Amino acid sequence: MGGAPLDVERDIAFKSWTFSTEYFLGNWTFIAEYQNTYNDIDNSQQIGAGPLTASKVTTLADGWYLGGSRRFLERFEAGILYVAYHSNARDRDGSDRPIPHTAYVKDKQFSIRYDVNSFWSLKAEFHLLEGTGRLFNQWNQKTTRSAWEVQRIVT
Image (cartoon, rainbow, N blue to C red; front, side, top):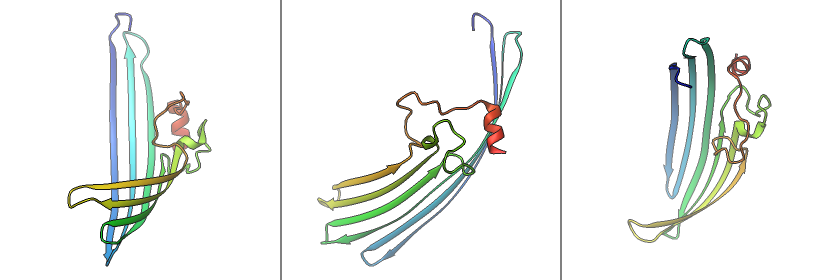
């Protein structure tokens, strides 16, 4: 920074837990999973002898999926899966964000798989997406907020 030293300090507390299950019944497979993630990040930085700036960001995200598939005609399998992810579990519709759809993604997936042999398979998937959470920022969307705004939203 113009020859001045930059001191940055970050303290991160990360907690996550996941519950998942699979159930097999004949040619049917059923799957489900839920994940909850908590992040608490304290940042501080100082440029040279300038003022010390500090921020705190706390997030509570969650996501889940539920699906099933069925094998048929020996080499084929058809599946359906529903996925939901919320970057802020307390603001599921993204109404506290400048661009609400960046806070979540809901995905309905349909698939068909063909087993060519015991070690090769071909799979086609069709997705119906709602929201852009967890997708790359392609159009310079303003998805970030100041630390004060984030702390006010989360607490």
